[in-house]
View 1 (cartoon, rainbow, N blue to C red):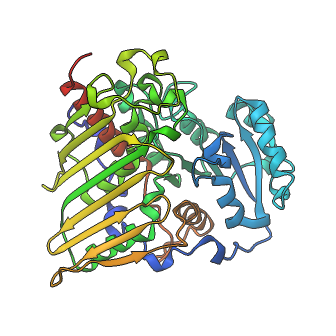
View 2 (view 1 turned 45 degrees about the vertical axis):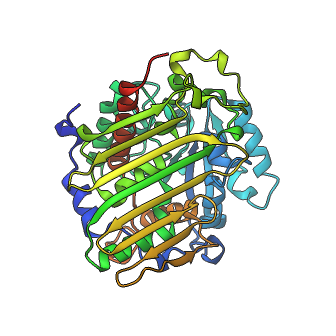
View 3 (view 1 turned 45 degrees about the horizontal axis):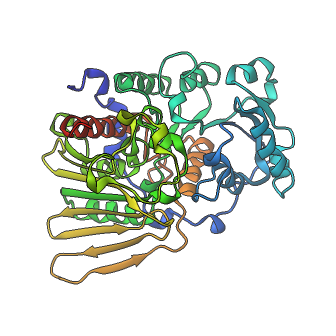
Length: 425
């Protein structure tokens, strides 16, 4: 589908990104070396969602509450936890209250909806930031019950927003809804950051800095995401009708990184092919879910491979693979410019960046053992909320809601193109 006017970059968003779309890597400081923001005033926060992304799990390094605790210290006051699963929310709060961060949670109240909190809120509980980590299928639209972003803008127009990615996992025809939400956020003037944390990696920002310092034009991006399917025991993840499929739900990070370097994508140029579950190479031997409970038309592909043109003429490719066993994923991103090759390996756990420069056939190796992009994205958001003055060297949000909508649009275009070209069952 051709992009309508609602998908065009707003002037403010585009100009902000063109002025300074990156952060000096030296300013991305590990969490254990950051001084907590001093002050006697409390910093009220509302958490929407009591799941793994907000409070952590054994499956990965995500845990937003942990980063907010370390950034704000005793100033942090979580005034409300919004989740329809009241028992789960109460359980995570009970655990927090048994730790050294008890002061942040001792007065936290649990509500099923944001509206319930608003009805019972005292003036002293107005939040300065609302952190949305609820499942993406319940947000990213203008429709009642799935419009948490618009609710926040209505009740707390002065609050900053942090929205987890992807911004939505609804049906394709609702993509326009996400762009409407984006426009509402732009019109409100609210500070809003979307959780594409890989943009905040030191290695990613090092690539950006070299590209900017040398006035390079990116020629191509090549991304690969191979997941360890044996460790994915969540039934809904394997059901496209619930998760939207692995490219939209999981591969979104690497589609976003590709866009971060290549720029806006010509959506009409996207082509893709897939290896489906019913084809001989697509048979998996270590599934930890019962795929027979999923309708055949909703079972996810094992491989999706896509190519596209960026609007400036560069070329992008992305391959998502459901093939590895064990626990560790295998992910890489390559970026090419005249004389340069950048290869970022294993960005989720122990990032390594290999650089080949003009005049040499050798690769430099850069490792970042203390890097924590989850903390960097939270730290930058809080710094912006705390200091609203223009500072050319200050914090910057690297992923706006509008930018996240464009990534969402790309992932859906890849899924659509792969389904169009696939063999039927």
